[in-house]
Length: 280
Image (cartoon, rainbow, N blue to C red):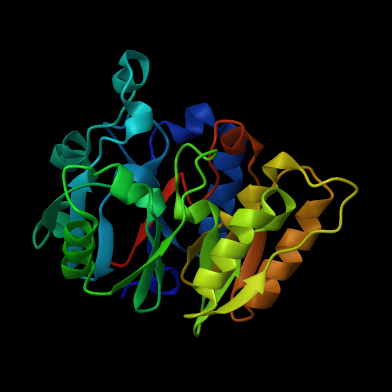
């Protein structure tokens, strides 16, 4: 499984410099300092590359899917919904190596609902809601065959429209998984997440000492790791330093760098959401 620590190249929408100029500048500085290759993709209509780009399982194994999530099925959002086919057909993007040995599955998926954790993939159960034309067993079989791994399903908190697992967990390597501070907002779902995850992973809980839990503190778990570089969202909150320190401690072999991320977070996503990192 090509997990984040094995990746060496990261892609962003070419809209990012315009939509999030400060964020983009800080990311570029960190990537160039650490000599990590980055590419801007044309033919995108939004900045959320993670959601519509394929899932890399191995260096020459990519999984495409139907990118028609329910939250984009309104006239307004369909107008600004990226068509992945156009992204891959654009010669300037040079994605031939991705499409050469790719497979396509007949499932509606968001890339943000696929977190690769060693030999297991973590998803929320929203995937079953998005694919009501199939039984749960059929969906599970298709996913296991395509990803060639076990799938761990977390309950979907219906208050979280997107149903993305990358807003809940992030793999820390060696059978360990970081779990966001969901208990500050919903102890019920937090405990359900914990019970499901602790059967498979050692859990590292992100916790923050603050006068009042901030609604945007979910964004810290949505950090970007490319190889040994970890870019951690910074939000101008008292939790910023605590999040950076905890993530750095969980990934001691990596360099953790804080990145001002409010421009993206205000739009509903963070650093994992805006990126697509693979191994080439």
